Length: 252
Length: 335
Image (cartoon, rainbow over all chains, first blue to last red; front, top):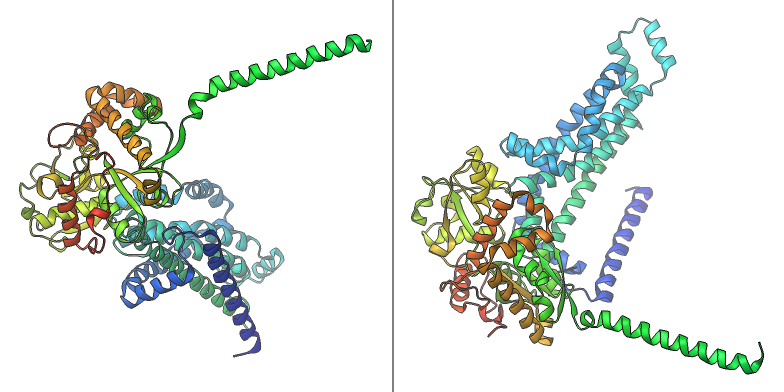
């Protein structure tokens, strides 16, 4: 392990320790009961028990599946639409109002309708996830495509490149940093999308676990465990996107 | 002005100012004294402002709370938050499901049920007449929609299944966490749904769907929602808690005797209710029926027998572990 990696790891651990200490101090100083704000060690203990019993894995697995499928579907569609928007002003003028309007409608209001239209299964939840990630990635792709150097585009065309070759050889590669900016935003939103979808219709998933802990068991520490699991999943997927970005955009 | 004239003038001026101040003070006291005697308290209700909560609007508007020495502010929160915030002392009173009180008390939350609001359990299994069986045992194999595997609807469903010797594994459960199980029933995705006895049948009727019910009361009685308070408040001011419970009971009795009184006060509180006055009246009439005990009277008294059998049912269903005795979960402040 290099010195730089160790430094980064140490910084992360120090930050985590500071966060836990501040949390513990808050509980101690305000004398808040466990059912309002449990102390970190209570949450950790509850998390260990939830992992040991297998309860947490079942819900984590369902949420991760929705995130992977929803993000995959949403990102692939958004990049395709974003390229089209970037290349054609006509398409942008026709589609933009619908895209903006769809983004302006709260996903929490849309999700119950999708649930009814698509029968409330995994597909409906994946669709909710895909919809929430679509807008930032599509817009980032459009902006990225348009940011390609016009002189290089002219040069490629003058050398006889087809429009498809201009897109694949120039516009998409030069748009990658911006597209990955959209992907970074989208992947964190996909976690929210999965939870919202589970709140509308699901039997398993971390959103369901939050509801069970909150409304069924009055188990506030378990709610925090579910929230922590969501945060870890979000961080993991974000890190994965950053890793892929580093390999594709800034290869060593 | 000479000093001889200045001094009396100054004295007169001071006298006028003092008298004016006394007048202002006494006027202020006259206006404020009635409310100054009232103790400001907060009441948390679940769901959203609705005609079902007319008893609390009547208690507020007709002066029952004021007669009890209370100035009540009503707020709406999620059901679980009602229990947590009342237990923590952030609000003095709440209205919560008795089944939630059993679960939260078992998990260590210092909350206590002090008076009955619903003498009958308000959740039922609802569906088309040909799908609602006469006996719970006939539910086997049916598809049932419910908000989730938590809360009073889940407890009611399990209790009904249990009364027929069944478990959740003997039926197909479809979950509707957004409480849109009515759409599921109308779409034919499920055969039956759990729902509030006074709401879902009316919603279905509005869609031309004739519905009947299998109620929990018929097969496995569970205690209904009631007033809850934190242990600290109950220990420190039992008289105030009793006065509050009595005020609610008085308001309920007033509505049971005059539905239009409750409807009008509900409209005063939630003007949109007036848009569909007939439906609101039907909901309130049905709600008032659920307040009445077996003798047909509105009573805030806690039925210890129903609590004891409901507690045993909850233990048998695995919803509570029985570590906290049922008598530690409620205290009848009227008794």
